[in-house]
Image: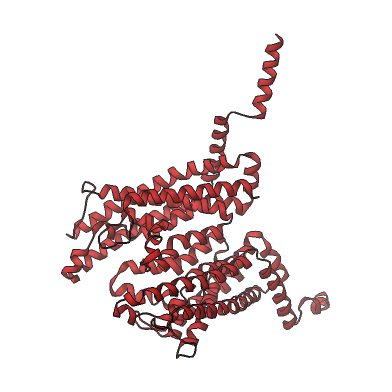
Length: 281
Length: 274
C-alpha cells in the first residue's frame, strides 16, 4: 500500500518533470512543423526554384536545338545532353541554400526563437527536428525539379534530333540522383549556416558567397595546393555529382564528392549545434 | 487660418537646418547598424587576402602559363578581384541600411520626424556612400599594392603611375560604392531584408551566370549590360567583352542600374506606407 502510493507519486511527479524522450521529440517535431508550414517562403522558394530551374533548363535545351546547325564537328562532339540540361543547377542550388537558411533565420528575425528555446530547452533537439523536416521538403522538391527538368529537357533535345539520354542509359540515373543529393545537402548547409549566423542577411550572404562567389574566384587556380583544396569546396563537390567528367580534370570522383559533401554537412551540423547550445538568441 | 500662421515658424524649419538635422539622425542610425563594423571588417579581410592568394598563385605559375593567357593576364584586375567577394558584403550592408529600419519599425518614427521622405532617403544614401567609398577606396589601394608586390619581375605587373591604373584602383572603390547604393535603393523598394537581398544578389551574381549559360554572341552581348559585367570594366586594365566597353562606359552601365533603382525608390517611398 505504502509502496504503491510512493510509486504513484514518484511516477506522476516524474512525468510532469521530464516527459519521455519520444514524446519530447514528437512535440518538438510538431512545433517545428507548424512554424515551417506557416512560413510563406517555404512555399514561395521551392515554387520559384521549380519555375526558374525547369523553365530555364528547357529554354537552354531549346536554344541548343536552334543553334545546333551553327556548331562545328568539335562542338557537336563536345555536346553533353545531361550537362546542358542540368547546368541551371548552378543557379538552382542557391534557392535550396536560401530555403534552409530562412527556416531558422526567420525565427531570429521576429524573435520567435526565444519562445522556441524557452519551450524546448533541449536546443539540440530543436535543430534535430528542423533538420528532420528540411530533409524531406528539400528531397521532395529537388526530386520533382530534377526529374521534371530531365524529362522535359531531354524531350526537347530529342524533338530537335539532338543527342539525348534516358534514365536507362548507364550512369544517367546516378547523376540525376546525385543532383538531388546535392540540392538537399545545400539546403542543410544553408540551415546550419543560418543557425550559426542567426540573421537572414548574414546567412544569405554566406550562402551566395559559398555557392557562387568562391567557385568564381578560385576555380581558375589549379596547381599545387589548389589542386587539393578547390575541388573540395561544397559547390565543386556538388557539381561533380551530376557533371560528366569529360575534360574537366579538377573534379572529384562522384563517390568522393558524395562523401565530401556529407562531411561538410556533418561538420557544419556539429558547429551549428555547438553554436546553438552556447550562444544566446 | 491665423492659427496656421502662428505655428508657421515652428512648422517649417529652414532648409539648411532640416538637412543638417536629417544628416545627423541618419548618421546616428548608420553608425548603430550592428552589422556595419562587421561588414567593413569583412571587406578589409577579403580584398587584401584575395589579392595575396591570387597574385601569389600567378607569380608561381607564371612560367607554366601559355602565351595566350599571359597576353590576356590583367595584373590590376587580378589584384582587385577580391571586389567580387567584397561586393556581397557591401551590397548586403546597403540592403540592411534600408530594410533594417523597416524591420524594426523605426522607419515610422523617421518619417514622422521628417515627413520629407525623399530627403531622408537621399541623406541615407549620401552618408552610406561617403563612408563606403572612403573605406573601399583605401582597401582597393591596399589590395593593389599587396598584389603588385607579389607579382614580381617575370610576371606581368603594374605600377600606380602606368596609364589607366589609377582609374582602375579608384574604380574599385567606386564600383563597391555603386553596388552598395544599388542594395540600398532595392532595400527601400522592397522593404524586407530577405527579398531585397535575393533581388540584389539575383541581379548582381545570378544574372551573369544565367546569361553566361546562354552561350554564343547573345550571352556575351547581354553580359555587358548587367551591373556586374559592365561595372567591373572600371577596375580592369584590359577590356574584352562583346562591345569592348571602356572603364567609364562600363561604369555608366552600373550607374544606370543604380539610377533606375534610385528613381523607383524615390518615387515609391513617397506613395507607400511604411
